[in-house]
Amino acid sequence: MRRRKREDVNMPLMEHIQDLRKVLVVSAYAIALGSVLGWVFSGKVFAYLASPILALTGVSFITTTPMEPMMVKLKVSIVTGVVLALPVLLWQIWSFVLPALKQTERKYLYMIMPSSLILFALGAAFSFFFVIPIGTKFLLLSVGGAVQSTPLVTQSSYLSFLITFILTFGLVFQLPVVLLLLIRIGVLSPNTLAKKRKWAFFIIIALTMLIAPTPDMLTQALMAGSMYLLYEISIWLGYLVVRKREKALNAS
Image (cartoon, rainbow, N blue to C red; front, side, top):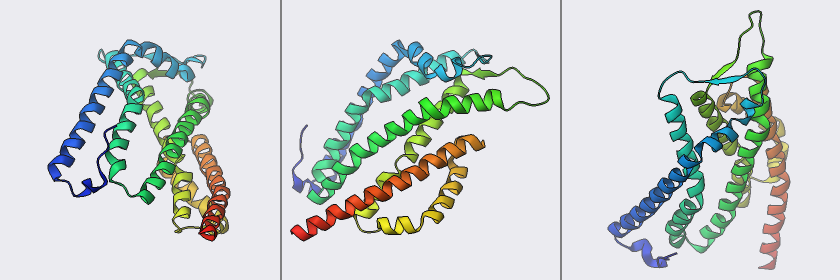
């Protein structure tokens, strides 16, 4: 990785633009290469992603337009390409941003980046392996009525449904990162978060109703439950952060 000197904060604007251009070009090539590989394996990738639907009895995929199979294959390829290119993207962003940061700012970045990625992956996994199988079964089969119907799902609608769920839960799982950062810089304290549990619960319920991918109560309950659990975990981790900060202050 080519490191820019710390004094590059004062470097000419065109040099910053050239560095940014390099980051964008390398990232674009990485995504393009990953998408080519994604195109080759898109059938297997979509079959894996569609497993929650394929596992349901009496539910079938249908195609409603001639272009739908091609567009689904293209979308799956691009998503796969972005995932495969993620290490390169992060490396490029890291090499562009890190040299311009102060030592204290780098310390926060070292803490935030890995934690954020791990929590996003946990949120995506929780969504795909737990919420989506339960949610699709509930939405397609459990909500019956006086008139029976045969569930038919288009591939494009399911893919959009899946991506929305994974992104939403991945972002929801960033809650501990945000709260712990606020605790670390002294804006919040774990004692305050503990005292405001009731308010936090109602805020989480209201927020869930706004951002939940679907309006059904089951999905909202799973999202609200996971958010509140993350809130409680953040409180206890916050005590560890405060204790560590106090030890550092006493040592200095």
